[in-house]
Amino acid sequence: MGKDSSGAESVLLGAYDLRCERDERVLFEGLTLELLAGEVLQVEGPNGSGKTTLLRYLAGLSSRCEGVLQWKGVDTLSSRYEFSSDSLYVGHESAVKLSLTPVENLRWHAALWQRPMKRDIDSALQQVGLSGYEDTPAQNLSAGQRRRIGLARLYLSPAQLWILDEPFTAIDKDGVAQLESLIADHAEQGGCAVLTTHHALAMRGRLRRLVLGLGAGEQQ
Amino acid sequence: MSNELPGPFRATLGRDLLLSVRRSGDIANPIIFFVIVAALFPLGIGPSPKNLAMIAPGVVWVVALLASLLSTDLMFRGDFDDGSLEQLVRAPASLYATALAKVLVHWIVTGLPLSLMAPLVGELLYLPNSATVPLILAMLPGTLFLSLVGGIGAALTVALRKGGILLSLLILPLYVPVLVFGTATVDAAAANLAYDVPLAVLIALALLSLTLAPLAIGAALRISIDH
Picture 1 (tube, each protein chain N blue to C red):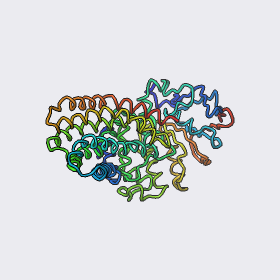
Picture 2 (picture 1 turned 30 degrees about the horizontal axis):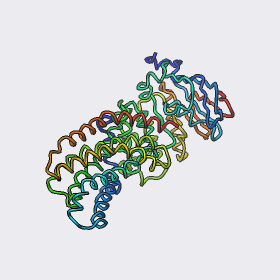
Picture 3 (picture 1 turned 90 degrees about the horizontal axis):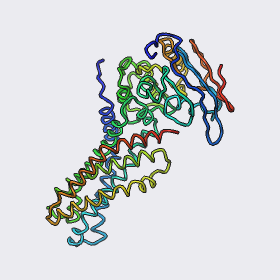
Picture 4 (picture 1 turned 30 degrees about the vertical axis):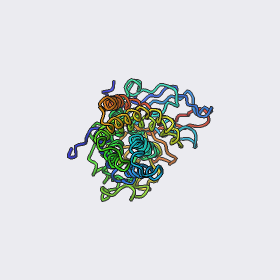
């Protein structure tokens, strides 16, 4: 089942009957979502509606939600290795070390994946507009540029599933457009992505939206 | 691909060593603390060589223990704050190996220099020359144990805003075996007695923690990022 990633209709990520409670308040209940190859899911909702909690759960980082999480039809608890090497999580914090250069930062990330990168680090940095800054410690770069180092992982990672929590924060207009088309390309090539943003996405491809709100999730 | 990447263990080891070098102030702190505090004892107790030599083994170990504790809190703090820890924990790499790499870097930048500085501190306190080499031999495995066990406490408390005091309460009791056998080794050597038994116990403690502590650290890190 895991092999036919080219088949457009195979369910890659399935989350069933999710329930999340925070401070005795139910954020969502009975939430089920299925993500097919080629799909992008935008999770929306007001602050505090559980977007980050949901994404952290989908990334396998949080146990605050109850439910079943499957990757390619297998429970992620029993295929932790495969799931984690097939997915890339970009969180609120960009996981960039300020005293390291962009290249040093990305080399560490890529070494953790234990899979070949899609391209080399220099060309990924060029894609995110950081060529010329390869050897500049991240502390000498602007907030947006630091964020771009973290996002350069999207150009490098061979992962099929992207879980992106507010990826557009601190990114300029052109950067946002570029990132949107990167995500669309990724979906076209058989990948899928879950992302949160307050930004109105102007993206080609199959974009679905999930609105988290008072009590339950609503899918469109 | 032109630039071959190292495995997760070596990559993490290399990255953390590089980080330590770039922030060399953090490395120097425990060592400066070690020397300064030890240098206060002759001032407080008086310069009598006999009194100082008597307390020297205990003082060296207590101060080394506190110096190691000083930087233990920072072992995972930076990675927790900037989100690197999440990446480390969810990476398809063995968390045992990467956690061990981080602890080893802590030992390389604190335990190892403390061990090498110990003879100087011994000299300040009139520790007999016969105890100099055994002091280094005992400090090497002793500080390795401190880093590994300290790592468990650091991993457990990294998510707490004020984890510092809790960390001390958690791990200082676990440091006691090292204090007891470390002091016993140096005491015996200072009295020109055989010190191989307490030294062997220290080495056994270090090996035991080397095999088991990374497991506990990995589990604790998973709990700490689960929020």
